[in-house]
Image 1 (cartoon, rainbow, N blue to C red):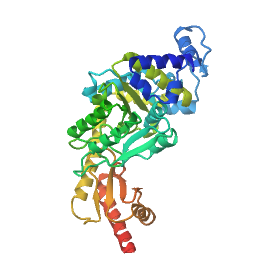
Image 2 (image 1 turned 60 degrees about the horizontal axis):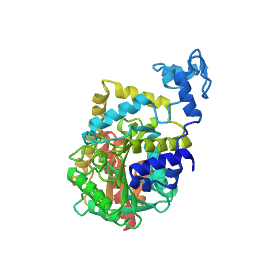
Image 3 (image 1 turned 30 degrees about the vertical axis):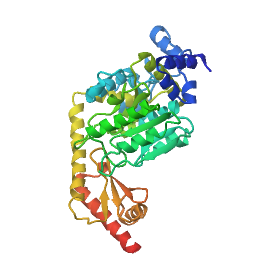
Image 4 (image 1 turned 30 degrees about the horizontal axis):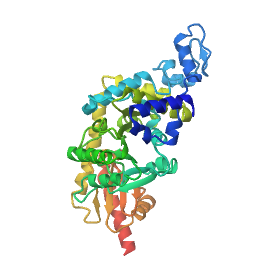
Length: 434
């Protein structure tokens, strides 16, 4: 094993042996080179005042070389803020700005010790880092039965972990914290579990209330006290899009420093929150009372980044940073959130109107981009195909009965026609099937 990896492992094991036990074989082997090209280039950037011939970019007239046809479309930005490589951990100013935003929006984090957010190539990359660092073949990945299918690819296919599902809703149509608790306790023999908490949930658009959030935290604490090492991952892709009475904070703050056997990891980003899907700017943040442990996890994270994408795109990091620094950022973001809330409320108004009879019910939703219909005795895939082929309407079929509708991409004035059309397709399928 590389001496740097061994040193990081010794630090983690000394600071918290439970966290060391959570690491995958790759997580234990990975490290960030201290004497490679990047570290030498960073040293040269600070000290080589005459000539810096270390890193593979081209310089012309004191600026990064660039093509006019590209710079003409980006003339508002200094070439050094878009053409140079960003550091593997991300643009320092952006990391600081995102940390401040995160703490401001999540007061429960303020008293906790967390790492400086590390920039990822959006949320999927952040989850992939978690998988690489902590998931080995056979490890349990605990997720609800209503989940984002990419978890299976990221943790199951790539890392060989076992997907363990529990029902998202209980009989009261609230978050099934007891199901989560039982799924966790079932891992006592393994002694380890990775829990993914995705709120607002994709595909249902559900966020638990404060009491449910406390139950989730208690379930994770119970598992830790029973001897299960828990990597508790909050997938906060749709954070901030809360439309009703639900938690308005990430559970990351409550999970941070919850128990020595719990490692809280926050994965979030500008992607959905700031409506910049194509920018691919995300973040990964760890919580621990030990600064030394956080430093070691950061170095291992940088090793994964260096070994996969080397560093994230610089232009989009600069764009997001400028937005965060703008005095108009919060007001513009609130304006868009109000539009999204209006769409969600209109969907509920339509579904609760009684105009669609009993052909479907819907899963509780109060946040995010999506909602899910539960069709009554009708194949969701058949309805999806009918909608697409005969009505030119796209939806997502999930399992036998569930149809996901992204109201986020439909103007509020068009929602009535959309659901009327879905109703027609369901009736068509029902007639054909009878």
